[in-house]
Image (cartoon, rainbow, N blue to C red; front, side, top):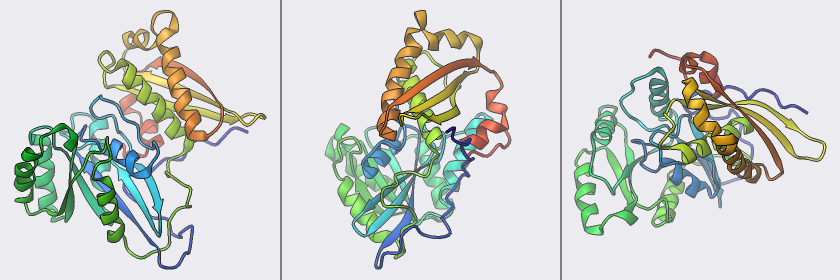
Length: 321
């Protein structure tokens, strides 16, 4: 049976009207993760949830959509919101991504600012801190990538950021190795209000399956072509069909802005697109827990960033450039 077209996802956090469970003495809430591009937000989300929910690549601004990762542990359920990196927007897509990041704070029960501690404090992070201060938000500061910096250098950075007065707590972690993450998790559990759970115990995200699958293909696109492929590329979900044997047939379209980008993705004799498809199919099969047949098409469309349908599919607002 062919699945319905994935419903558009709205930016920000919209809590379900009714919780999925009604266990007594449970806690549930939403935690927004914000920060500059490449601070490690998606890696942290996946570590907290214990499964890949948000795609990760070395390419800056990989995360484009608001991704909800759901962690249910003990009597607490925390829905972590992985947001696009906050930076100076230069295009319509940039603006939509940054707006989605800030809107995620509206209904969050706690907010974490993730900072790459292995690098010097840059203008992007300073701008975010200034905006947090202007909005009078109480935010948890999380210094990430502590495995890549000498401990003696962490304290001056923490002190400088703490001087802003915007942070209620400070944690030092490595999302990659997991160091310090358990302490952060326990703190967040205590911050969640008493409430029935909003989602099922086994649910790990609220994104439509087709959208998650398309994002996994985009991850492989960036991993395998990060130096060659320009930022202006997207993967759109076309169809999803469940076969009689229980396997899933997926069709997706990779969209690039220029015709001369298409041969980069196809590769000589189709070798590159085959490699992208194989790696993406393996990740998607792991996500679905069943065999996956993946068919990829590659099209050039220089106006794709100006098409409202793209924004609706991925839960972004189609606003001004």
